[in-house]
Figure (cartoon, one colour):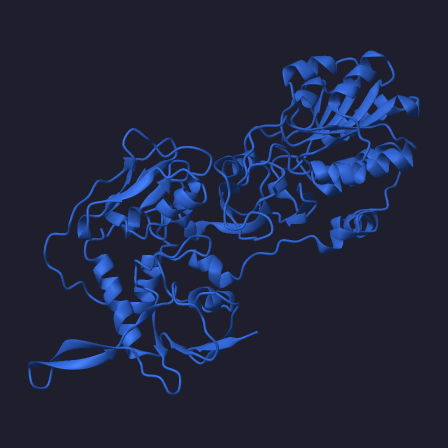
Length: 537
């Protein structure tokens, strides 16, 4: 692979790759505002200017400038190298690129920072971007100067509602145009544009339109400063109090890689952010997916119930043992869930096959929904493919309801999850004694005789298989609420209550067994782009 050098470091690159992209991939961040690896490169912020030394036998491109000679107090003509934007310059074999090692580049970056901050409001204490703002970061790295302008700064509109999800503060905007380019190039909905010129520039929504659709949150995500904020996260938390866990979106079968940001002091999730994975979601997420973090704490079941009344776990397990004691094994059905992890479903399958010798499998899944050719998949479940991989002939909920009506199924052990018809489904399930392990309320929990509280995906580590068949791990972020614990642990307790001692007692035991059933589990991935790129966006 060909290479060039950046500040003395050898950087490999691919044909046609820009200097900034190759450097980022190698772990070296060239400061920037307008460049984003998933968007076109307009080179309008000029923060990524670098000095490219000429090859032997060629002359450098120089500029004639006028500079004050401090010793004589007179202006004189001098020459300086013409700096080039690293986001638009293609890497070439053997070139030498200078960044922080060039006094001209250091001076230029400081100048860009000063111009950007001339009219920028000093409202960091109330700005949601504070703590992850590129203006703050680069001021520390390339500035640390006192403001020289003493004139009144230019004032622009503040707290402008762009639509149902996004608020715009024009005074904070550095006119990088990332939001405009995202809506045009990725979302294919070019409703944002720039008006006026110079220090009067601001982003606007097209007349008669508003910023809406399925990808509006991404305009806030790509904003390098605090100009765009989401109404969902605005003024909710300070980022320096938040911690992040690598997770997987639960909104659909695409399985977007995510960062789940949470505050450990309150054991509460506050937002989802996309985690770069070129094989799954590239750099993006949809609005619906980014809001699924709320299900980590909303609508939760956190206490065991028997016949609708709250009870203790020992009493609930005793009820399970009484309900299933001496019943014909062929009358017991097992319901997998397209919204539970691969480990949870595997344990339920093992109990059915080993303890009951049963192949009576069904599954629940949320109904299909809106889809597009960007990210949104019509399957609104995170693990449908995982259920199919474990039990290819599992039947849908409608078949279970028919078998209950016909008297073939009288007892059910189920993992919880959304169903296509809600309350109507609950009514159709009333003819059987149902034991459900669930994190959220659903038709199954409404019809259940016993409900055992499961942790949400955010409270346990789990593997989810997306529509492409890729197995991806989600890390634990939050501590379990109430009496909830991982569904596979509840199922192990159910097995013990029925007189069967399972061979698994830890998650690693299940995953070792899963590798034999589904070999690709050993390669379950949470691969992301290099950290330098992640920081850069």
